[in-house]
Every structure is written in structure tokens, then in C-alpha cells.
Image (cartoon, rainbow, N blue to C red; front, side):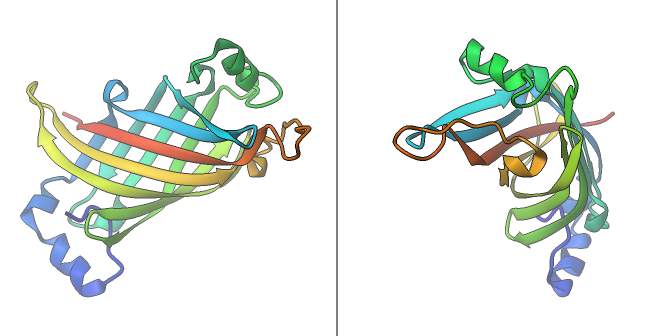
Amino acid sequence: MSIFSRKDTETATTDAVRPELAALTGDYTIDPAHSTIGFVARHAMVTNVKGSFQDFTGTLHLDGTDPSRSTASLDVVMDSIETGNADRDGHLKSSDFFKADEFPAMTFRSTKAEALGGDDYRITGDLTILGTTRPLTIDLEFNGAAKDPFGNERVGFEGKAEILRSEWGLTWNAALETGGVLVSDKIKLNFDISAIRNA
């Protein structure tokens, strides 16, 4: 089911008038209790460390009759970072990394959305970390829409992206005796989003 605009003009016109697509039009609030914003970093060149942010808010606007007008917004509290190790979490919040006291939030504001075919989409926007704003592209899969047992109308997405943390000023590292560095520059981001339609 297409939510965002398709590259193919003929297909986009067809999808724009589908009743099930039009029915999704509206404003949604991301449900943090059923959503995950996570990341994966390579550690010591040999393994992956996974983490997530526990405190975030976000909104979606889906427009089924004019999908190109769909948007997304996300605000993440940096102090809520969690990797399963308190010392590591404290280091990530410190001046070596996120400077959480000085820059308490990471934000994303979409600027463009497109469909790649089937349930695959791509959304581009501005990601701000440490006061630096750079473009970020997220590949998304639409998981569907449903009404939950409490009467909430939900939509779901899974997303993934990759960034070079150095492009946002996250440059701390330590050299290894065997060569290489302690923390990879490339970070994988993953999103599992459940959003509830606003009343």
C-alpha cells in the first residue's frame, strides 16, 4: 500500500485514489511504548554494540490523496541513551560524544518522501546532532495499518539508515595496538515505529 509518492507517474495517480490509501490520511503520534529507535556500532573492530534511546517523541502526517505532502518529525532525548552498560552510557553522554548537558536533543525533520515500489519507501530529512544539521536518508518498509483492541488506529514502519558519525562532529576514538580503532565511524540506525492516529 503506497503512503508516499511513487516515482512512476501513472502508478502514483492510481494509488492516490485508492480508498484504503485515502483512509490513512491524517496526523499520527508515535507511540514510544511500542516503538524503538536504535543504533549499532562496531567495537574494537571485532563485534557490534547495540543501543537505543528510551525517551523520544514524534509525529507523522500522512496524506493519502496527495502522498508527497506526507511528513515526519522526531525529537530524541540524548540523556536516555541505553546500551546495557552504565559506564558506557555515561561515556556516550559525556563531552567525548553527545555532550548531553549542552545538546540535550537530537532531531529529525523530513524534507522529502518517495516510494520505491511495493511496501518500500525512502524518506529524506535534516538530522541535527551536536548543533550540526546534515541530510539523512532512511529506507522504510510499511508494515500496515490496523485498529488495536483499545480502538486506536495504528500504522507501522520499519526503517534503517547509515551515517558517518564524524560528519556530525562525533570524532572521539582510541587506537588499538593491533591496528584500527575502538569505535567505528559508520553507525547503523534502525527504527521500528508504531504511530497512533490523533483523535
